[in-house]
Length: 106
Image 1 (cartoon, rainbow, N blue to C red):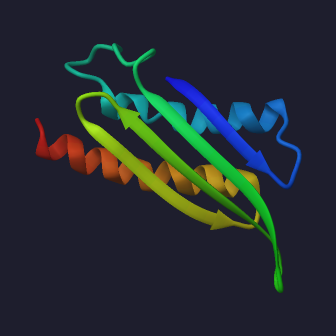
Image 2 (tube, rainbow, N blue to C red; image 1 turned 30 degrees about the vertical axis):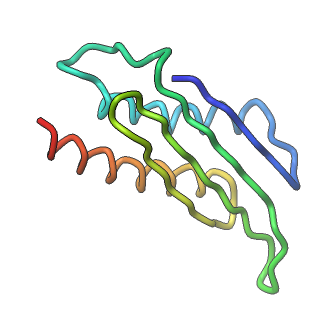
């Protein structure tokens, strides 16, 4: 998968990037066709993460869009108290969308 990041309002270091890629990389198994890993260079994920101030404290907002050739686009938007929570929530939402798509198109 090819990852594109758009980050604003805070420092996005290599460990945070690795965490996002680890969590969202697990979604690849839902996009494999007949057990083959043919999607390494064709699937793009665009991730946007922003840090905003809220009256209850800092809130991170994250959006991810998966561009899956010949199958469409999957999008999720979440907010959380930290960046890793956003990555976990994004994975859960996108996993549900991909699982539903996969079950319909077997």
